[in-house]
Length: 124
Image (cartoon, rainbow, N blue to C red; front, side, top):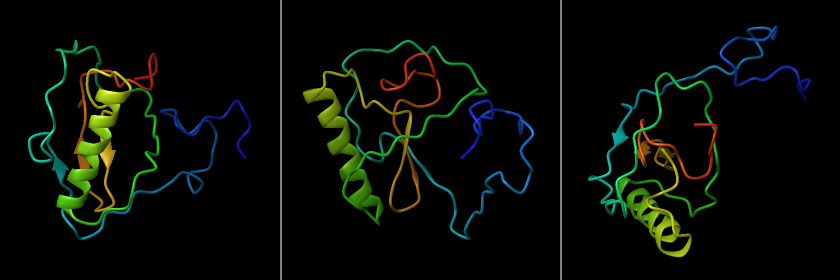
């Protein structure tokens, strides 16, 4: 466990050895950002202010706990279900997340780069 003063999500290594830091391995499969129209997102209930600036200082990762998916069709359906629950049952203006990672290893656009996510106020 890391000491409290050392945060692995900061922009510097905070004294951690480079071998400790996670490495990103890309498969031979092409990276795909699945946009909202492809996964058939509903429009947001209202226009949300674009209030984020790039580059992001922090990234917050949350697990949805949803059913597994392995195809674009299955993962799109699950993303729609998540959006519907968050809008209809929780009263959010749109899906809560900026991006979601599907079981098919693709990234699904939620609120996108510019709008604060609903679950991480003051952090994104």
